[in-house]
Length: 599
Image (cartoon, rainbow, N blue to C red; front, side, top):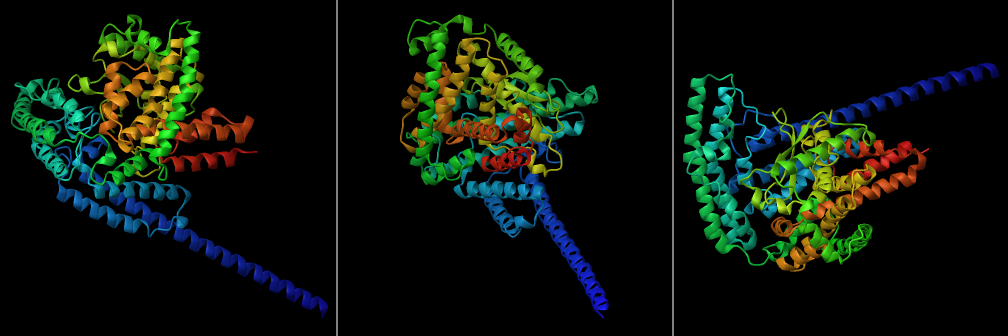
């Protein structure tokens, strides 16, 4: 009897085990199905928005290698912006209904990132930032002047699309002018000092001959796949479009910009002094630092602290050079001694190219993953160089005919010191912007919106981190080169002080110039151009130093946590392997890396 009971008990236990296994498996299948369904919902929403955004921004579509909108320019009228705001709000409503906990690990990142992007876009539309569609670094008219850069043009249709886009310029300019007029009426304009600096660049685009315009550049050397007769017809059509559409549009904008707009432009400089200025500057800080809760006051104090630290390091280098004089005398020596300056634009470009190739050679020692996209050292276009910054990076068009471009300003060579060139090249080419941007554009198995995504604190923080990484890479050959690096770091620390000083503390332009000039070896022309950039572009200058400090904090955390297990090449790969992210998401990825590798 006891044996039968035991046997029956075992049978029941076995059945229970089978039943519980079946229930577990069923629940697991249900969970997997929920996961798949939720993932699919998110992916469909992201794909839908991607297609929509390309249609809304033909220029962005072109940069992504999508050609079907190449005959159009963006529509930026108030009606279009209001319509996009309504669409973005609708999209956000759908997005927040998706529970991140029911998503796969990779889609949780996509969800968080997509939500950040959409919320930022909505906030920008609500603040009506299209009322100021330009600054000293970026503008809607510069988009037009550079719209052929790297654009594949091999067929008659390609050229006809480009000509059609030229004929879109008057409509595009008029919509921007209308937005700027709304800015006049609502006390939301650029300051006078900035307008006066940009105006000559606009006026310089008014040519007597259409062939003198950079817009005509694609027709100077055309595809051999097109017959000579067709080439001539296309050239004539292009000349007509530039003469009747582009040049009159620039003339009309120059008259407005140097007339009504200049007259209405503010004398005050600060963002917080504008209509709804505190909300505007808070938005700019959040957008460019990706640190939602940081205040202008905190940033200002961080800047002052960094300035003090870097100044001490600069004084040590002056001692190393055995220079007999004060800090001010040493920087004056650097600004004026001919040994530190190239004699021709070509010499400057050659020097930068040599440094870039030298870095290329040693990159594998510090990085496991290297991008396929090449890059080159290119002079800043002459028509914008006088009011343009020292250098910049322009990423390659998807499917385009050019690699990434490290733009170097060759205007006023006596203002482009060679002792800063190593730091500048590290920042703009490799391992800085080109390396980071190209890796991001080559990511696999991620939504397309992430490939060209850019967060300034991440990208510019990485660029500044790269400058200092150059010390470990052994690239600073002389104390002067190292002083140039520190001067660049000081420059970015000063930005924290000047940007917040101007936009939140009512500093005037001269205060900004004096602070930057007295703490760096930047030339006087660079100092003026930089301060005007901060005035015209609130918040962006904060991203460099705050981003760099965050990256170093994460590296030190990883080094301390992993000890001998820390691998610098792996750390760099983890930092870059997800493309551009807000700083909090970067930190989460580094924490995950530490957890997985800690023994």
